[in-house]
Image 1 (cartoon, rainbow, N blue to C red):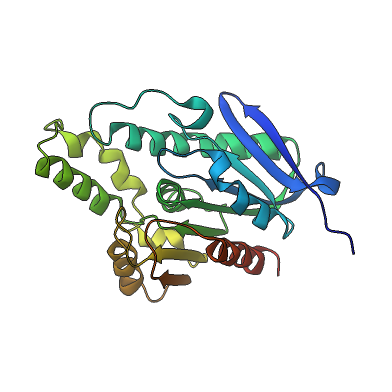
Image 2: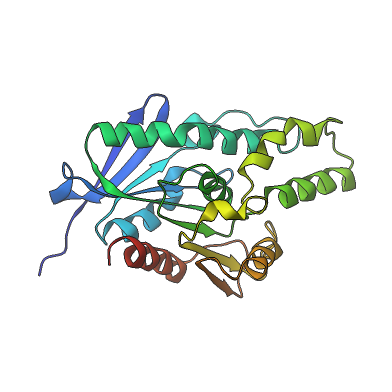
Length: 249
């Protein structure tokens, strides 16, 4: 049988540049829908291989450029982590906007998943606290514990004598409402896939290990491997297989 061809389409949804990856023969059909978020200081193009693997299973996959990234690149703030948290916050603001766009075009069949890498994995876990329409999610080398990550960044700034405003925690108080570790009940038995490298030097695997240990009742799959902060092909295959199993079978 001939291989199904994928279409990779560039769109602007408002001011959000996205890539849409979908079977070329099914561009105008309602399909199960995945929004997949890239990591810090990268772009949507760097998760395109992952999107292709998911789309080949029968999904419509959308890759947004986060605020301050990719086609929206701007100078990073001199204040540590300000641009990072702005980017996640904007992802949260824009998720429903992206969803509504494709729903209005009648291109979503009701099945919705979200995933992401690193900063995109944090975005994914945060979205689960407020969006019950998400039916399955994948957090790849991210963290479900925003408070722990805030504390880590604050400690890093102090260690290297970097400026942070005195009200740093208060300025980021919005994250408490979107912190899955603080609101695990919001997961609500939805399947959540974690992958993390045991030698990750940027986002500690302990955040995920603690979450999984504290919530054995949840429908969580946790895969850890001897890797640093890097996603390779076999991991991408696991993510595609997870969405296929949870949303298609």
